[in-house]
Length: 267
Length: 219
Image 1 (cartoon, rainbow over the protein chains, first blue to last red):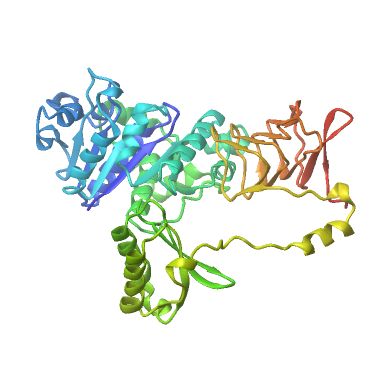
Image 2: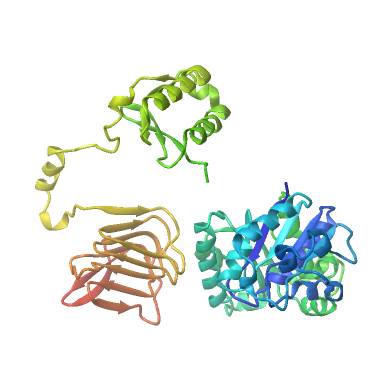
């Protein structure tokens, strides 16, 4: 039986889809069989981020409504043979499926895959309820902004009350120079408020924009800091004990990581 | 959600097995197995005073008793007829009133309290007819509403409302007071926009029609 992980946040634009895409790719790189499920019906993005948009024939709603078989709707990734995508419908909305149907769907998927990763829509309405219905693990993504942390807190409360205990936290798009200057919330403050386990911290990285537009997850890019952070997250997910990157060092986090890869800062 | 159909509870009188009301006998039996089997040695030889919770017919009771005794080597002492005394029923009787008499009466408060050991998160509303004690933080966007007093053993960043029925003698205590708002009775205050960092526990009380927040541990 595979694991069903929902990636959620409450607030939009914090990087749920990017996180889901990178985690999925990372797990696939580690040889796991993975299916990414886009639960954001009506506003699908995951296919674009994965660069698989032009291959969609059937979608999640078609599967749920019995228009096609599950196998037919799964899109095999163009780079990694054990990575699949189940795209969302674009012409329907969140009410096209209900939590029971999602439970059945994820149940069917766990029989074939090691990991089922659900990309949750923003908000706490029907779409959120659908996405978490079949999950047995939750990852909450937040950015270092008061509003995003507030929404993450609300989401954690909702997850816990629906039985998804101990969600894990990913802090996304942190800018260490700003934190150092005191212009951005620091990691400890966020963990203090949210009081859940930290799975990883992903630094803000211009390469994310590039890779998203190209449809190639950044995790595969050796030189990317965000990619490194996602690789660490994936290793932690698979049970490895990976120390957090030293973000607070005097040397500056970027310089240090760059040194690690033998690169200079500019690149 | 059949995990907790069965709970073992130790009391002064001995070990009880609490059975959830809505569970059928088969679920209970399989749950018993799940609970006992991993630590069979621990349970072996244990004396169960009685079953509690769900009403059992005599046949059901006998069946459960047999399972416990034959399969798990435990002894069930009670019978199906004397299952009616309440575990929680501990009376301090006279002792409690003695203590109260020794103390200045205005500093003693008795009543029902709700005790929560969790973080109260954004969007969560706790409403209680009585006192509320939170062992954990109250986050921004969370709301606690009590007719009595509120005690937070943690950081307060949300809205706390004490004495919601208009009781001005209610108070609010917190380890770290950084609330969005405090309300006692119908009096509302908000935090000053520039909040000093107080590391001391503080108490909020009504004084001359205003909510006053001050440290309660004199140093």
